[in-house]
Image: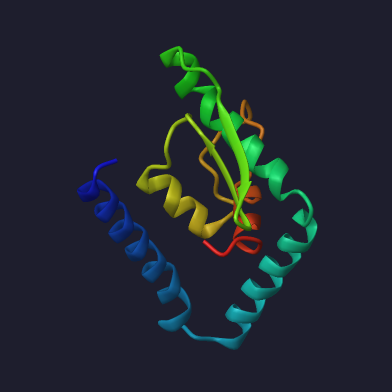
Length: 131
C-alpha cells in the first residue's frame, strides 16, 4: 500500500469505529452497555489462550480463495522481536466490509469452508493486543 492508500484505510477504520461508538453514545442506556460489556468479556474469556491459533487460522482463511486462485504460496510469518509479536501472511487483505463486520462480531461474511466463520476469533485478539 502506498501512503495515500494507508491514509484512506486509516480514515475508513476511524469512521467505522466512530459509527460503532455512536451505537452507545447516541442511545446510552446502561442495559445496552452492560450487555455488550458482559458479552465481550465472556467472549474474551472463552478464547483466552487461543490467540496465536486464531492468528494462524486467519492466515489460512485469508489464503482459501485468494491464494488458491492466484497460485500464491500460503506463507505465514510469526516473529517475536522487542516484546512485539507479529503475525502476517500473504492472503487477501481486509476490505472495508470485513473491517465493519469485525467491529460488530458474530456477523462474519465467511462461509463454512473457512476455519473461522463466526466472526469472533479475531475480535478476541482485540482484548490481547495493544494495536
